[in-house]
Amino acid sequence: LADPATADAAIARVIDVIRLAADLGRLGVSVRLPASAAGGAGAAKASGGSGGGLIIAAAGDADLHAAVAALTPADASSPRGEGGGGVDPSVIDALAAAADRHGVPLIDFGVPLRRGDGRLMPGLDAAACLAAGVDPVLAFATTADLAAVRLSDLTADGRRVPPGDAEGRLPLEAFAATVTAGGFDGPVVLDVRQCLDPWAATILGARAWSEFAS
Image (cartoon, rainbow, N blue to C red; front, side):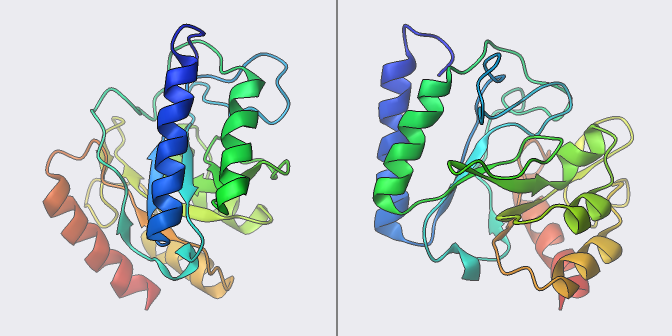
């Protein structure tokens, strides 16, 4: 998406995914964007420590909880920083136009969290917040119009682990209480990218969230 030589083809692929998400109606799909373009208002930032990327969430996702985020290679979405060139604002415009056409909101998980700009809605990635030195509980409580939450955790040495892992730093009980007490009805997506055993991480994370969020 950041390379002009391949951006058109990449945009076309993402728009295909937007169409698929709209057809299925209840599917959340994560798409990673490189760093933001300089001066591009509303472009998704992915600077050091950022969760980066967007989630493409089809209408009806409000009832989709503890879904599993798409698995990606370990080096594709590190919370410790993302390289690559900037995304031209026209790329976001093209994706936003397609998303609007198909009724599929685009959610920005960049850190620090930002208010929506009419094209992108703010989302919270718990592990990305921890990586950036931001308290996920405070970030959730102080950000208006949050559209989605990525349920993820991070160890002291920067490894992604599922919520509920003994080495994780996310205060899961406090985070779950804040999310549920706030009446949040958007999707809470269990993100197991980069976990050593994604299947075991899915089971552990889902159980831990169910225990504290019920």
